[in-house]
Image 1 (tube, one colour):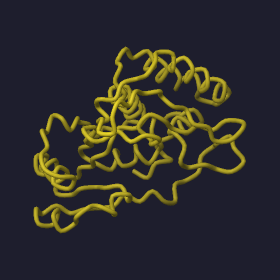
Image 2: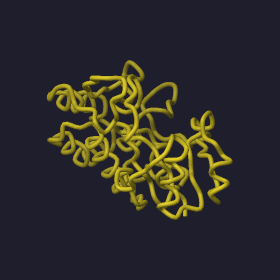
Image 3: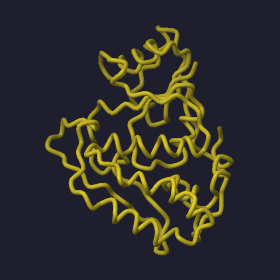
Length: 225
C-alpha cells in the first residue's frame, strides 16, 4: 500500500491531486509550522495580465504557529476571491459547472485555514473521481522527529511504500525508512500534458481550477494517474 503525506494547500495545483491519485491513503499533515508566503493560504491563477496570486489573509501570532492553528484574518476575502475568479474565468467552457461546485465552499463558516483548504481538496477529488482515502494526521497521533513522524504514519497505516514530493530529498533519511521495510518513491512532476489554457506562454504551476474551468471532468486526462 502506498501512503503520501503533505500539508494542506489552498486550491492546489494539478500535481497535488496527482500525488493523491497515485496513493492509496493521503494524509493531510497540518500539525507542522505555518510558513509565510507559501502555498498554504495562496495560489496562482491565469489572468489577462498573466499569472496572479489570490491569497487568504491569515493571522500569524508566532513563528511556531502550526498550520492547523492558523485562523483567517477577516471575513470578506471569500467575496474578493469569487469576484477575481469570475472576472478571469467566466468565459471558460466549464465555468458554470465548476463554479457551482466551488463557490458554495467559499461560504464555509470555519475560521481555520486547514478546514477551508480541506473542503476544496475533497470537493475537487470528488469531481475528478479520485477515490483515495484522505485522513487527518491528528487521527494517527504521530510521535518523534520530522522523519520519525512520517515513518510512524506509514507503520500505523501498514504502508509498504511512502510516496514523497521531490522537495523532501533535502531532509528525508532514506535509511530510517529502509530499516522499517518502507520503500520511498519520488513523485515526478515533469512532462505534464498541456490543456486549453488562455495564455500566451503555458503555465503548469497554477491552481488546478485553471484546468477545471477549461477542461471540466476531462481534467483527469491532464494528470498522470
